[in-house]
Image 1 (cartoon, rainbow, N blue to C red):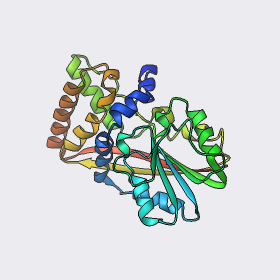
Image 2 (tube, helix red, strand yellow):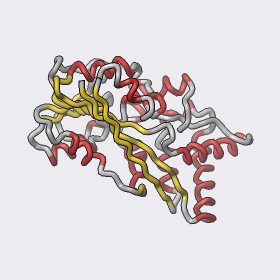
Image 3 (cartoon, rainbow, N blue to C red):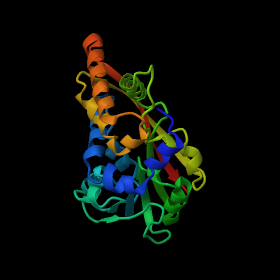
Image 4 (cartoon, rainbow, N blue to C red):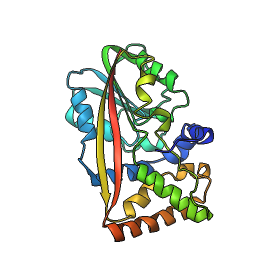
Length: 272
């Protein structure tokens, strides 16, 4: 995974970009999620969360719930739980099962010790102050409760990083172009335990390695294009680079039969 510049890090956590562009609706998030259909092994991520909550009763807060992939599954599989989805973007909450609310993860509108479980799934890299947010998640969690966080490794999807750099270089007429923006780099799987250790004593990590094999460049194009909200931070004409990446991916598939992407994400179950 690429390492962001300070400007890119700021953009990844920019509230206006997040609420009004990147997650104004579920389109870009769905595009990023869709590439995992070709991953082996397949992981039922909402099912993993359901399993982690097998001994939980009461209130579950999904902070930064996005398009409601986990909220909706919990409503289906665990109707006994009081699940509340929240996100900084009102638009992306439109299709999430109620109750939902617009809220800032750094200042949750809940009392101390009011939740039995808190979810922070692929979102802590989007908050401006990660340590403050983790303390806030711990504040609302009852003793004996669990925080479930998730993110990607620093090594996740390196082939797409290399593809982007090559395509950007071709567009600019240089050997290698600027690195693409990384969403996870501020709170990667490698960095997460140290961050979470500021508020939680018991942290269990579950890694989820896999390989994506693509025989059509369309999912790759959709994934890269889903970063459009951060186009200004790429240092290269965005759409031209996506188009060039599509050509390179198609050529790779034509010669090798497949475009392979190695993945590594994971969950962290944390207790106070």
